[in-house]
Length: 298
Image (cartoon, rainbow, N blue to C red; front, top):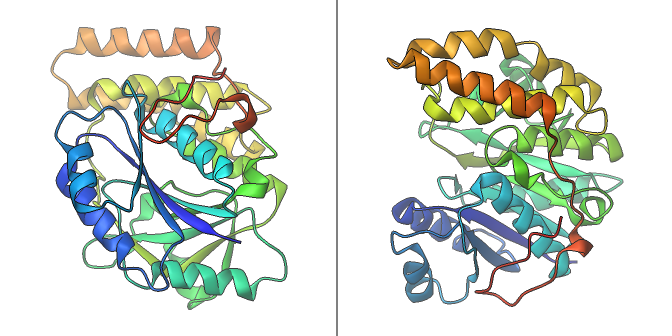
């Protein structure tokens, strides 16, 4: 029974170094730390090789986005025969006891969960509401107890790889946005999942920022989830569908080029309705050596 951390990274060398330093300081230590690098050009790969020689490195030939990176992350952890994988972005920084709190939570449960979620907090260790899968009131009332949840964030996402092997990998075609929401809710249908409030992972609080051209992925992926009964849970499908129209219009206030913006929105709606994301299982993707690029495996 081993576990690993898998970090998905793209061109954030300084943040990645802080993340890896935090992972190396966990008590108890993880059995393995893996980085999936999305074809970074800022020296991230060289930094890992020089400063973290024990970290396993999987370098992708092209930037496949967070979604493609996490697809490879879960596939890699399954094929490395780990029991659990702790997934996170390169701008996450787990506090020293975050891994230990997850292990204690596993020991507390009578049956293995589909996943455990670390509590995502800002620099002041206050919960970041957009990453917390319960209301802050419910979190406060729990007073440190495990809370059953039906979704989670890929910031400190501790996934049961036996469960993960029984369903599709995270959907790489999403590129960015809502891949964690879709995937986590799909796993939570298979077995209970829990928020571990004692496992703290710090992360920048990005609330209030405009999405820019990324609004395309936000809207397209929401439509994909909403119209596909085999993706996510029914509750998540409803929750992502409800604000689609409001977001399509409302995010325009963050841009001065309205024509470009509404062209993106039209393309997002067309692609969301006319196309569908691919579904991929871990066994369908060849297992390359570290430093090589995995096949797309559609």
